[in-house]
Image (cartoon, rainbow, N blue to C red; front, side):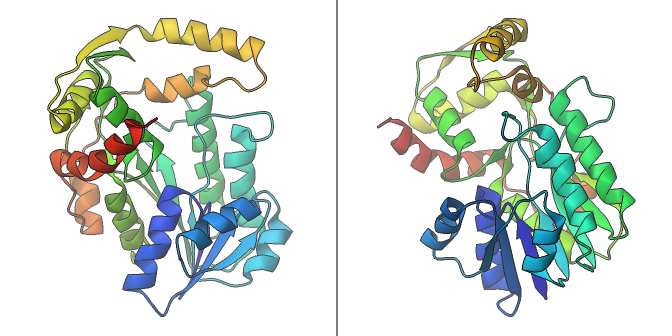
Length: 303
């Protein structure tokens, strides 16, 4: 089997390469990335893959790099756009290029985001939905797996959670917002299981086993540091005002209104059907936190 992974240098991409190398050692893994730095990230992890630097929006470059393949795992996506990397270029353009590349693949497995909808007021969610429709309009059957916050060792979300968990006082936007974090290894398992499904167009929504408020998640994380943070909830409206001002004043603001809109989404996914289809056993929230917070906590303490 020849498996192509776009966005292969990301956290999920590198974990997927590692798992496939162990579980399917005869598989040919082709990693598509955008830069030499991304190549180094894969090589530094000691991962074995055929790596190509391509423009994700360039169908000819993708076709030349890949040739034929059995499966494409599409992991390209952003929640914060910039002038050089817009939602349109990251989502719609990359999907159009995959279709136009005519890779003669048996199927595509695409990682999406819970909350995606063509009717959403959020630009990121709308762009994601448009990208999914582009894939479904092609001739290659596509499985989309939408997930909420992904927690894994050495990723930004885990570091941010660990940092808040160690504080005595935490300010967060809309503390009642529902989070349903899923363990990174469960996401990897879901992708591998989806590869083995009978090809077909489908959208699967997957989250962790528990949906809890943002405030409760921070407090729950705090217990792993023998801490009980006091969480103060700030209305998202305040954040939108600040983000709007930053977008006007800065060419590359640290936070955008669209990014806040993704964070403002309530995650409450019924995972039973998806887990049954993928034969997936989800990691419990406490086990997940125990796994990711120890490393992230020690690192965040030195920042």
